[in-house]
Structures are given as structure tokens and as C-alpha cells.
Length: 88
Image (tube, rainbow, N blue to C red):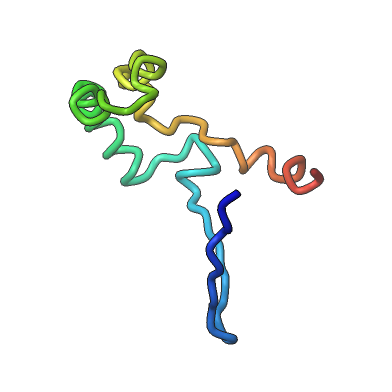
């Protein structure tokens, strides 16, 4: 069994976390929405070139080549589901 590496952080090191509305709320319209819509077809077309050597390529290639998978859409719908998520 391999030992896990030990990490030492300074005493005053602060951990933090963040999200963005585009990532978690879903159905937003902002600059990222425009970028995704403008670039989805190109990203899907280039997927095989960028990812064909991954072990999982055969399993994910159809999804990777689908432009719809490069647009966030509903995200995790955090805006509507936040109370349910925080109850868990």
C-alpha cells in the first residue's frame, strides 16, 4: 500500500470555494452562454483530435462529438434546487 503524500500548509492558510451562476444555476444568458453557442460545433468537431488517445475514448466519443454537450444549458439547476441541496 502506497503512503499518501503529506501536505503542509502555512498556519494562516485559508481554504476557499466558489461557484459561478453560469456553472450551477442554469438557464443563464451571459458572455459564456454566447461563447458556448458560438464554439460548440467547433469543439465537438475537434474532440477526436484532442481526446482520441484517452482510455475512455471509445466509451465517450459519441457524447464528445455532440455539440449539445458543449453548452451548459440547465447546469445543476442550483437556483431552483438550492434548498433541497442544502437539506442533504
